[in-house]
Length: 337
Image (cartoon, rainbow, N blue to C red; front, top):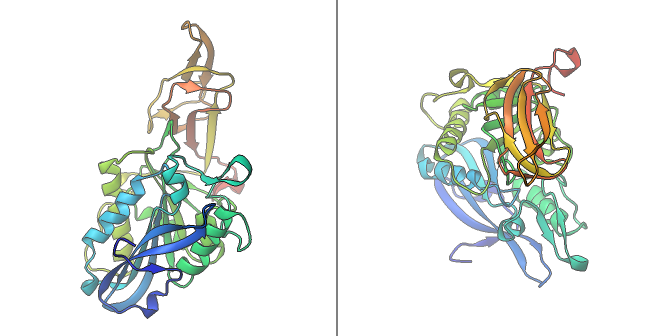
């Protein structure tokens, strides 16, 4: 396909060492009896070593991670690499082509599936579940000993460079803190997500949220590439000195989040910025009707740091306005609530 071999199963151990490969991975079939394909890049080092998996665009509008993977491979020299790096560039082609975060189903007038809540998929499930099953069993099985799943916030909202990491797992904690992220949430995980599926199968993994959807943010992309490179250095895959890490970035680590959501429909004005420290009771957003009258005011629920904002003024009930990352002193939340 476009000069790239089509594969339905990958085994990095079968590839010749010291080379970079490009494949088109054949996923599930769609309603017109054709297949969805995911571009795959593989760097097989000249010497054996750890296996790193990178994946972007599990949600179709989350594009920063694609450029991260491309830049990681631009900098790789397989002759100097120990181990392998596999990059899946656009894991949700259905959502990407629909310009939508969700996987699009065509049965019975159409439906949508959150592709990050159905892993490891089902062999006999719907198309999205089958596609996840094929990625899990035929792409990643045996080819990833550690994993970085790259996302962004949803359209109409904004994150900084942010990481979900299961701090109960020391390897995951170490991975996360090798990235110069703005914020990290110590997090027990989400059932059905890519990250949690890997961790449950004893493969250390993090979710890397690279800013905003539907655009490239060079500074966040560059810091993400630094984090991946740090991970490879720490694992002995490449030589070199560590770049900036969470320590140098002075990353804010919290164990709980609070989402302040619209109570009614209206035009929202957000009064705080991502990364700003807020105090409980501080006014963080207002909503107005079409005539400019204030119909709701919203205040911070906790002392903490602004993790996300809704940057689209059109907000209906339950739409995200402000998300705050904070630290809950309850011992049960030490590793995330």
